[in-house]
Amino acid sequence: MTNTALALVVGLGMAVLMGGCASHGQAPAPTQHQAQAQAPAPEALCNAQPAQAAVGQNSTASVVESARARSGARMVRILRPGQMVTKEFDTQRLNLEVDANGRILAVRCG
Image 1: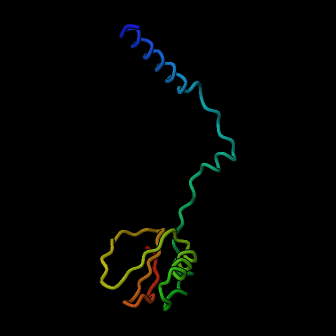
Image 2: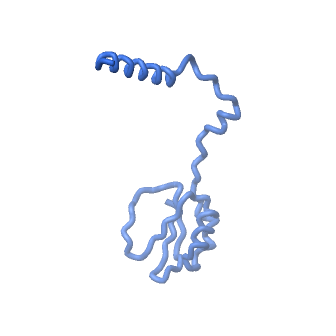
Image 3: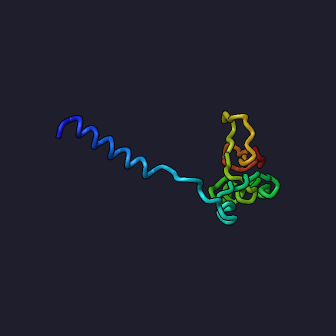
């Protein structure tokens, strides 16, 4: 087979493969169930009030997770004395301010 014939065969093969990936017509409209399943989950907004029970406790993994779950936040950040922190406000984050011994002093969102 010559180089030209080989190039033609390879080119036709690629065209056939790519044609199989092409969309034909419009996709069917999703059913109501599919549309609900594809909808993004609502944001988990932090509410520090239910997590106030953590104040005065040691910041163990179980206490921290319990406070996060009670607040409804997606994530938790422990703020230690003298630690540099970012200033952006995140409605999905619970902040636990702790002392040098790891005891929780304050609970707030952001």
